[in-house]
Length: 101
Image (cartoon, rainbow, N blue to C red; front, side, top):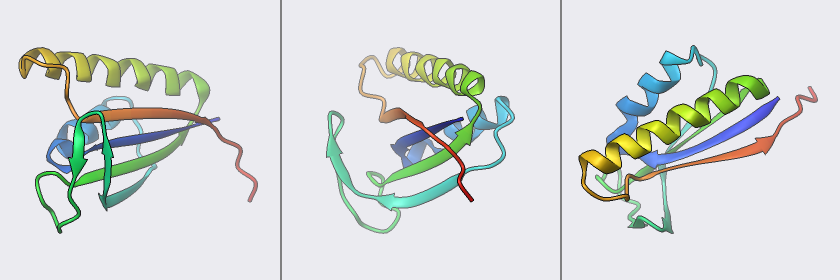
């Protein structure tokens, strides 16, 4: 199994959920109002501000993990072209995952 840690702006939540649904991912944990600073700039920690990040954790098979990564890569590229820059606020991290309980 693999764990995907997906960090994104709250304003893009519908696109992220649509992609998860497209790949039949229906089990995940979602955290709202996640603050941080990165390559797309700082985000502020005010309730539901436009700069607020969310984070999704989902444990999936290795095969599905790589398919999802391809999907997220495509989404980021398409949005970067649409926005005429490469700062679409989406980051996906892949972690080993083993269910122990």
